[in-house]
Amino acid sequence: MLDQETHELLARVASMYYEQDMTQNEIADELGLSRVKVHRLLRDSRSKNVVQIAIDWPVKRDYALEQALQQAFGLTAARVLKTALDQPMLRQLGYLGARYLEDLLKDISTMAICLGRSTYEVINAIRPDLQANVRIVQAIGSMPHSRDAYDSSMLARQLAQKLGGQVVYLNSPLMADSAHDAHVIRNQRHIQHTLTLAGAADIALLGIGNLDPQTSGFVHEGFLTAGELAAFSEAGAVGDIAWRVYQENGALYPCDFNERVIGITLDELRHIPMTIAVAAGSAKAAAIVGALHTGVINVLCTDDKTARAVLHLNQS
Image (cartoon, rainbow, N blue to C red):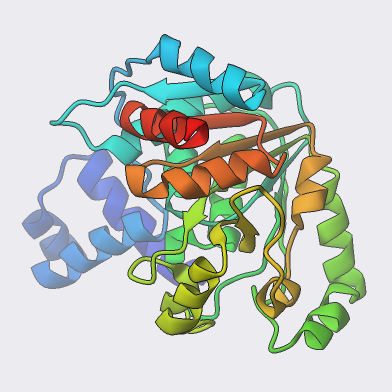
């Protein structure tokens, strides 16, 4: 969390640059700062979500693939982005997911948020003037080495600020050292209260992770080695939702790792009326198929290439 003095300085510099159209040199002269310092403050204002820039990309959908996904997996809805080579695909997908979510927000009271890049892109694309007064609940604990904007606590705060609603934090680490420690933490009164709120949400927003050691947060955050994660894959694990590892048939992968997570469970997610997952990339096809077989997901937002890979893999 930013302290008030830092937050005020970032907001002031950002306002001078983005709203008053002052150059970085003019800002430096007026505030008695170096131009390098002003540049750094502007960069921090965006990474700390003091400044949020929304680009209104025209989005094209593939309606045939949407129907195919709905029929194949019994989804409530699907949103499939027609990709273009000259546009940033994940941001476009975030925009597509945000437009779908915005139509639902005015009719709900509570929303659960998990972590990840795709979740960040959806939240970042939600219109800043949308005032829905929705309570946002952090559904999984925070990273020990928080990746700033992608961490669940930061995402929950950002969305609550956009919507003018309350945020309920899960003041816990994402992982405990052992299954026993996780049980103790989950049963702390405040932790239990937040997890109960998350499980009773009207909507949940999450991403789908594959088990690639090069990109996995499990390895990046030091919870598993690349070798341990590879062993999961060799034994039949294909992906994760809310950091719960599952198999191709959607069943929870039997491992101590799953017992150490502090956050919403797959069973609790199944009881949420609307769970929206955003995921992209053909490399995630197996993870997405497994995720759709968990029974957790009602709405999938993805791109056309990934949708085709998912449908092909599901038929093979």
